[in-house]
Length: 260
Image (cartoon, rainbow, N blue to C red; front, side, top):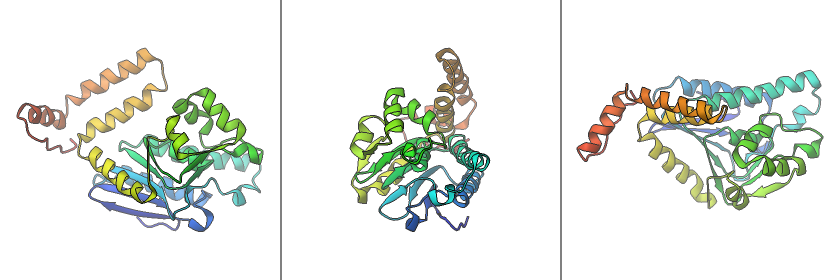
């Protein structure tokens, strides 16, 4: 896949998607949102891809936000359409059966923070900065920030970050559960690749079912969520990976998963 605003590469079953607008600090304009949606649709249909890393070009920003220069002239109708593009992208990432790791290599503000929130795991460089500063512009988060941030760090902390517009560093993001781990900048992508490779070595059907159970369970009550987990657990026993995984365990050898 080739794009104007993205870099895309696959190596050893791991796709790396890089938002490539460094002069704009990788801000999300309409064209970039549409390219990301297209990119993740392609990943969905590519059986060779087992895990995904999402990052930003350059050393300053993961994604510094939505493109304010483009948003400034929007009216209520076109602004809603723009927000819907962001939600479409988030759904494409969350509904992807493959794990997505955000390698946050700098500013992740506004739409950039929201982009990281819809990924399964967030790894941050020490220079990463997170925030939802939309109130400073007279608007609110539009790509799911009011919902996903609260689900991840709790309503009170989300309210503080969204209502003050404050920016936090990587250490604070890790403390509140927004970032899973923090690394020196030079170690971020190697760490993301190592984690992606580790996940890709597991039973891929089980990984996809685990992602579905986590995602779906947050949207319902505990009883229904546990029922969903039981359904997916049962379905694992219809897979070749389950048979191989348990046989390998009993034979004390590494499993050779096929993703089937």
